[in-house]
Length: 157
Image 1: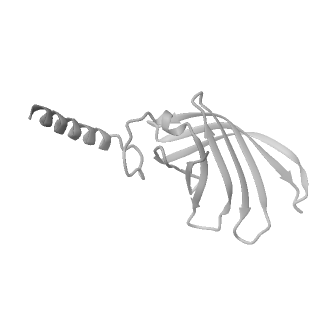
Image 2 (image 1 turned 60 degrees about the horizontal axis):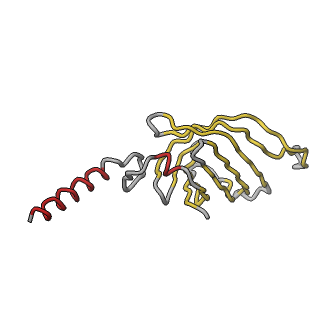
Image 3 (image 1 turned 135 degrees about the vertical axis):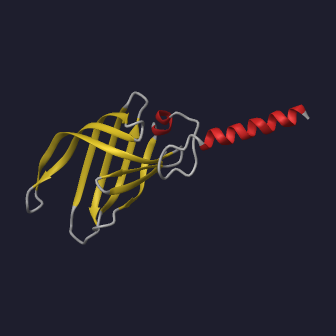
């Protein structure tokens, strides 16, 4: 009987503790793992949601490391009918901000420069700081908001 009571108390404690760990607006469950451990993974883009205008779709991969460095590469194509292909690569450092509700990425953006006729000029780089609002972060999904768009990523091999 004593063992049954202890198991029941432990179960209730675990359920309450997990519910208290729900951190982000779109999380449907909490996690006892540290946010840094959840973030450090290889993430592939599943979808992008934007309400107001056609968006550029394509491939995107994010890779966060425990030493707080990251790589983010994208290959985009327009959905509005315009012929446009753009490849961006960001590489730099990351850190949590605002009680781990935001992710600050400080990076070098490498992209292809083209003229008004879309003739290739050459590669170009610039330093950028991106602030991502984390909407959901667990072992299976990483969602964030950036520039009015909601990005959904899942782990990739």
